[in-house]
Length: 188
Ligand code: PRP
Image 1 (cartoon, rainbow, N blue to C red):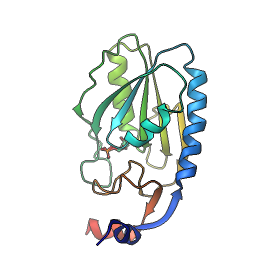
Image 2: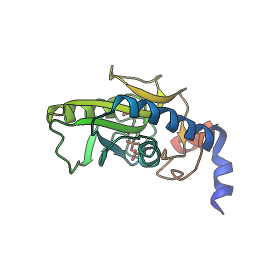
Image 3: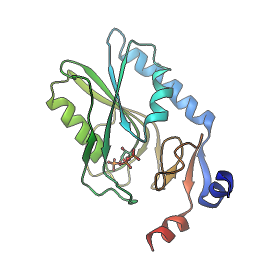
Image 4: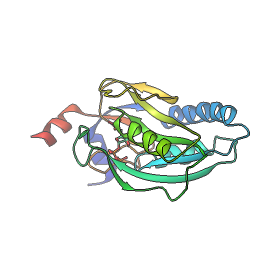
């Protein structure tokens, strides 16, 4: 079965097209260019979901920046956050004195972002802010501040553009909503 056949079976509808996503990147990039003017931010991507968003976003930022990655996971293979954030692989950059911008594909409970922000601040960063593509507020379990985001989303399971379903479908160019029955079947 081709990838396209498979996708039509699991996606209920498109939530954001490629153009929608590009517009969000342009708008966020413009804002970040203004806010980080004269600074040299360290842009930290949270693996793996943020890879596509980060590469598009930094190319819309007209500032001198550095990029690094951190792999942090709170979901494992389940559909809901375990509430237990694990550091799987660390930054290779010294963050002390740096202005750090964490880039995430989605914030849900906020536990992952809170963990990353606290860790980076403890290491002596000058500032730590985050830029998130999708802001899902329904299950928020922390008061972590989301300084920049592309769009709010409802309590739906979204895939594509970095967001996965059982570690697949990250490479869709759009963001789609998973059919509820797909989650129900998997949970059985
Ligand atoms: C997802 C997503 C965020 C986090 C958000 O990562 O990329 O990092 O969950 O959830 P939270 O706000 O409830 O903490 P995941 O752990 O699934 O890893 P992945 O990026 O490799 O898919």
